[in-house]
Structure formats: C-alpha cells, structure tokens
Length: 88
Image (cartoon, rainbow, N blue to C red; front, side):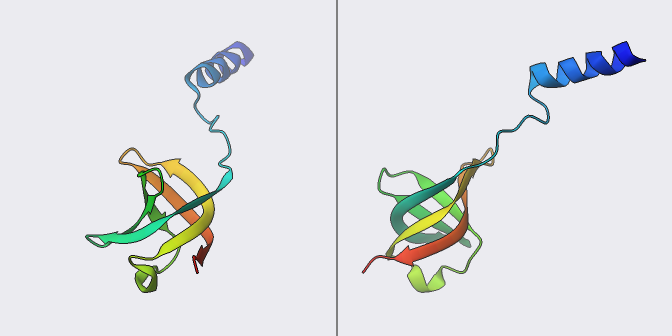
C-alpha cells in the first residue's frame, strides 16, 4: 500500500498536479475598457487583462494602475484586483 501511495505522489509531482506556484502581486498600468459586460485593462504593452474584483464603470476610458494577482484562465489573462489608483 505504501508503494502505491508513493507511486501516486510521484505521478502527481511529475504531472504538476497540486503543485501550482503561488500567484505574486504585480502592478499594471493601462486604460479601462468595457467589452460586452466585462471590464478590461488595456495595459501599456497592449496586453488585455480581464479585471476582477471591483466595479470599474466610473473608470471607463481612464488610465489606472492596478495592484493584483495575474492568472491565465485559458481564455486570456485575468487580474484579480486588490487595489487601484486612477492616474491624475
């Protein structure tokens, strides 16, 4: 039984299952856009990030700097926003 468990653990490690590295905080600056019903940050490098974690309706077409964690959801990059500051 111990060998079987060790085998399963080895397979998980090789395949990377359960070994997702922790997301790190980052700062991104760009312009808020609304595409369909989704708020998006068009970053300065022209990468689009779906904004999650806030109502950005008052910031459409404004430049902001967001702090959050970035993940790829398989359909694009998503930033889970912890805070943001509009540019003055």
